[in-house]
Amino acid sequence: MVDVAIQPNRATRTGTRRRTSLRNALKRKSTAAFLMTLPLIILVAVLVIYPAFYSLHLAMLNKSMQRYVGLSNFTFLFTRETFWLVVKQSCIFAITAVIFKALIGFIVAHFVHNIPAKGQRKWRGMLLVPWVIPPAMSTLGWLWLFDPSYSAFNYTLSFFGIGPIPWTGDANWARFSVILVNVWYGMPFFMIMYLASLKSVPDQLYEAAAIDGANWWQRIWYVTLPMMRNIIAITTLFSLIVTFANFDIVRILTAGGPIDKTHIFATWAFKLGIESSDIPLGASVSLFMVPILAVAAIFILRDVNKRGNES
Amino acid sequence: MSSMAIIDKGAPTRKVKYGSISRDRAWALRWSYFFLVIFAFASLVPPIYMLITSLKSSTEISAATNPWWVFHPTIENYVALLTSSQFLIFFRNSAMVSVLVVIITMLISVPAAFALARMRFWGSATIATGIFLTYLIPDTLLFLPLFKMFAVFSNWTGIELINRWYVLVIVYPTLTVPFCTWIMIGYFASIPKELDEAAIIDGASWFQTLTRIFIPVALPGLIAATIFAFTVSWAQFLYPMVFTTSTDQLVMPAGIITTLIKGDVFNWGQIMTGALLGAAPPLIIYAFLMDYYIAGLTAGATKG
Image (cartoon, rainbow over all chains, first blue to last red):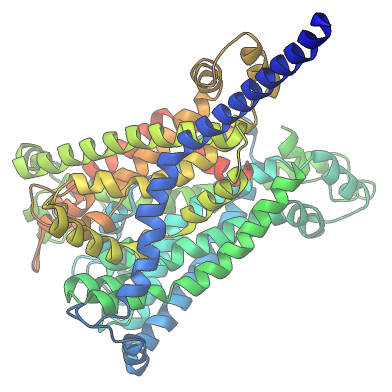
């Protein structure tokens, strides 16, 4: 009787003890994990998520930020010609620059890939320099190359009988110049990404294509591009976001001029919000970047998740 | 060598003469080199031209002689900048901000990446994706609300943040932490599970697993993330332009642009020298740690 009475009692006690200790361990592990992530969550919540929503609120205030004015900042923007210029210029700037970066990056990656592996490091090293120099600093160099009276480009071109080009003085040339500098700065990123992905395409595929009699164009179209599709998509979308939100290059090279013709969202928002200290109007301008960012982000996210599932 | 072979396997070799493979290959190689020289030249023209100009005196620049050549090389621009207290303050501010940001970034992102990669908890997958998304939110969207937030903050607490260099230490981690966490998750996830299971069985705590196993094994990734954090905080231009104005609080890129460009008088020799000196730290890091730099660049997209 005594034995019987004690036995189940002991059994349940050890059982519960084991269960609680197990639960405690589990709790400890996930609590520890949560605590390790907490600084990150706080940082992102306070300095990224909150300001993003706060700018929505700011965009609905009047200039002195005392009164709620609803959507009148937006309706005011819609009536201004400069705003539509900025929208147009932002799209032209981002799309043209990204297309050229991707194209040139793709071509250059092939050239680097073609040469013997031993020499690739050296060339890659030189080609990546534009990406390494802080864009604000290299744009100063470009500004000096474009200088109206001492332009080194115009000096060189004059030997070919090409007249002085107003690189940053004329609206269309200024548009060309900012795109050129952006392509120069961003191309190496594409080159490196494409080179990495070119190296991961198995050689057997090319051998099989060669046996089937594919020419170089067919090899690129049917082997290289499908194999690189993922990386091309993600780099292009990523670069689209960064280029669309660019500030440094346009700000230093043209500061939006001549007569606001090269302003993009970021530089115009800076001009309105900081230089003319109309924070609400500036915030509403920068909010127009959100739709395109959201679309690109959705596509990137889909791709990231897809690859996460594959691996 | 195998990459070389790719280029010429297309042509049907039966019809053409013997040895055409090597001839094709030689031509493809020659063209590749030809275009690489052109592209490398285009990549290097602006920095080289900056170097040329930085070695010129202002009289030589305004004399409008051949801009591509230095007739009377001088280091007076370098001397002028490196002895100007203002410039040295920019340099010091930049160095302090960048080093502090790197430390903060690593302290935040390495434990977070470890927790997200290994210690699954409720919502960890969502957080990992969310981090990647925050990396996509650009600084140009946040600078105005942040500016207002800091102004309100100093009204409430009396702690002045606007126009102080340390405000940059607060905001830069928003640019560096998401990406560093993201690539560290990738590196940590690639470490075989057996390794940390063995450590746990041997009685190591989670903290010990992180410091004794994960950090040493993922050291290349850690170096890549450090380089990334440093170069991003060194190169950042918008936030210093917005948050700092007085010359003793400015950092490198913004300082050069706001102080050396005075009205319409452009002292180009000094501007180019300042730009080169401002570009020097990332370039030096890149020159010595190129492989880590490239690993960090590609890790963001190829891992994950």
